[in-house]
Image (cartoon, rainbow, N blue to C red):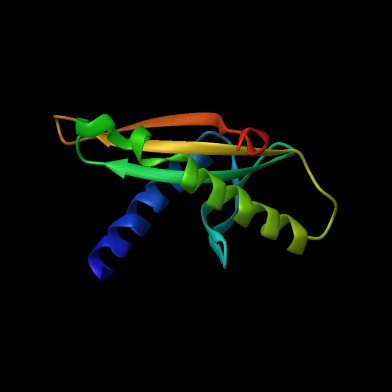
Length: 123
């Protein structure tokens, strides 16, 4: 469990660095509440982005994209609602993104940033 958490933190940092290079600003890492967790909360212009980071070593079984089922999406949306309630300063435009990290045969990583990967109203 401890090793898995450390690995998760490593890839969340890689994801954060990737998103910073795209011009986003980090607001919060690993926001926890009773409903779930949000890996990264980033600012993209005036939009608040709730980012779920998924890493897979292999593309087997659908790779990283298949590890974001509707149940996980619902937990992220519920946690985002709690974050927004606690946040001061109005309610900005929001977006739910996924950053999928897939290990490549050469040992490198491919980053697939899916902006608007899911929508709270669709759940």
